[in-house]
Length: 408
Ligand SMILES: [Zn+2]
Image 1 (tube, rainbow, N blue to C red):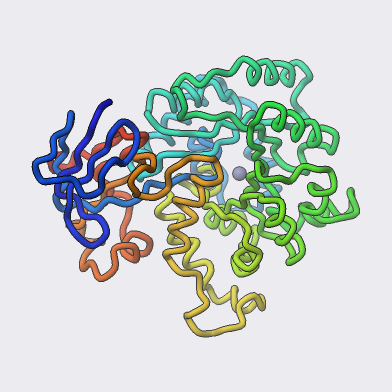
Image 2 (tube, rainbow, N blue to C red):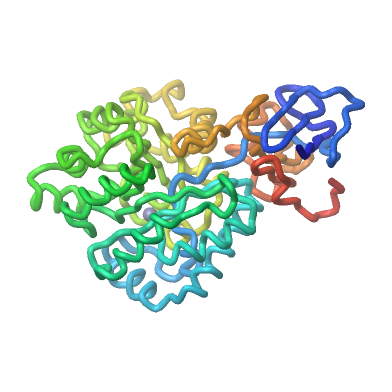
């Protein structure tokens, strides 16, 4: 079994040697003379859990900056969908590759994707060394032949990476997939043992349309048709009332908070206080590059932590306490971005601990934005940027090294 030694790395308050055996952390305090197949000098670097991006559309990097500054329905119907109709499989491969390179450099080791031509994205992921959940996207405007080929793809699926890629069934949203097909998706996913990935309660309009068409709100609607369960990953959940939060929590749903996308599309503010109170599982996601406009999870953490503290949060009545004690702490946002995402997808990682999967990132403690280091996590969430990332580990392998003069 291959071994990797991170020599003189900073972790949990002091410098030490960290040994990785195979794809897991074997020893977080290895002896100075420990040997390994590969030894990396990690002096001046701090080891942190890597990121798990809970919701994205990878190839939408091609639409970065294409349609900014408009609300979701106009943005989607008048700009994004017409553009996407022209994309070829080769375009999607290039778009996925662009995002993968960005994620590697930013310390993200996993993403949960929903897009077209999944084979192309799978190819890119397989060669990158990353992990992914690749959504098989379902929309009502797909033909019966397209539907049949998706079923065949899932039936014949074999992970070419031996465990880093999982498929998911991804009905786009309740306003693009009819009730019958949503029920079919839930059955399909459960028969195949796959997760379900959907956009949910993203805008006020989605809620109003659902009330008009189904006589109830989106979360209650999905619950009524038997869609919700611990295998469901629901992106956004901005417009969810207190009772709906309890439904989501009791069904074991993972909610993916995407603050940049919600702000950029003017969708509203994720009611984190209610989410936390309900005990629902939360992960963090970037959404696609056309509503973000990048896939930088470190930046997403900062926006999540700041959005929770903004003036409008107090004005909308969700924050009663003017003091700082009740404001979303950086440590919880960090937990959503790491452990929360890993747990949602059954990945035994998301933290640096002996026996856990060796996914991690090494940040420079010498980077100007990481100094002084009163509190490492505070610097990482609020001050740094992804240029501080010098090395990324996924599944026990080094999948990214920065080439800016430092020898590793
Ligand atoms: Zn999305």
